[in-house]
Length: 425
Length: 53
Image (tube, rainbow over the protein chains, first blue to last red):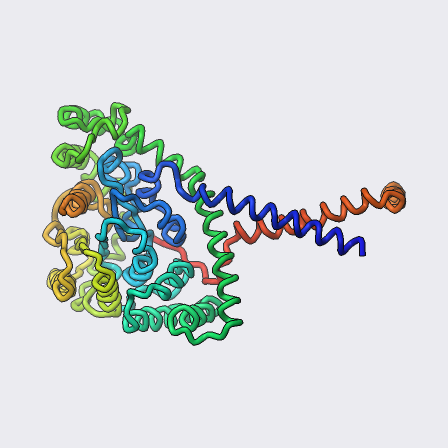
């Protein structure tokens, strides 16, 4: 009997502690420096619904993408640096292998907290491989809280939910436990066919996930990675990674136009409102002339790592006449645009090209690339989506960091297009 | 071992302390479980590693 009493006393103390923790972390999910958190590239952030909804700025909108966010983070061209101190505070969502379908789910999940009804999707050509999104990749980046919120979103049509559900069920074949729970979300939150016991179980699980997200958001907000990103943003210590000399050589250009990344002044001082695109392009050109001098005009450090693999890559894609033109990703993209349409969100698709010099080397047919761009334009046209089309930049030197990821000039141009989209009424 | 047994016997003589220690033990156990579930990666998805090459 004494033990039971001790257990019950401990339980009361535990519940009081958990309640206290809840009150404490509830406020901590709102990150003090929301602008930095928004441009902080993190795979984890995109999965945490709480992290996104609590930190979406009224001066920005979601920018969905994939691995490009994790590249060039220490350069002055990455959105984190470019928009530091500007009047635009985007929420970057995505990391490697995040694709149209998971972004459609995320958008349907967070839309109620978006003040500006706009969204940008940066398309990577590799998403459009014949296989579409890889099942293991989708499963590893799947967020139950986003999915549940999307299924509970009353503004989303049954057809769209059905498409999302079918695709998700199929892709989660590699993760049966989650697949089972997803079926339950469908029944309880969307079709309303689950019994009361099922509803109570799901409610309990959802409450636990919500608490867990609050906790993880608080930890992410205090993570070393975010602190580093904040410091980089504030100090503008970026271009140094490409070489102190390059930074020095670009200094004149940058300083003359107010972009003093190298001087250590804050980015906020550099950009009272709009970033100086001409200065950034000039800096990109200067740094590219020093640090991207290889046959593919990509970053030299990446080229050095790629060089040993080159013999195997020569003409390896010469039979890809239908490359990037078939596969389920186009339907997933259409689903994303359908979500935008149903939720009254204005989308902009950013068509990122491939590195023409490298793709020519691998023999990937130019015609196939052009057909891919055309097909994306076609899907965008069907939904009246706006596009920022960079397909004519395949051979722009220093546009790429590597084979496909945006580099110096690429980021400047893409950032500018996103900023212009933001500024439009 | 002997010291431990003596300690347990002494606890029997002091029921309040015994109760406090039992409560503390249960509480610690619950908190450990709570913190584990809050911070653990509970995803059952197979690992997927992003590779550049």
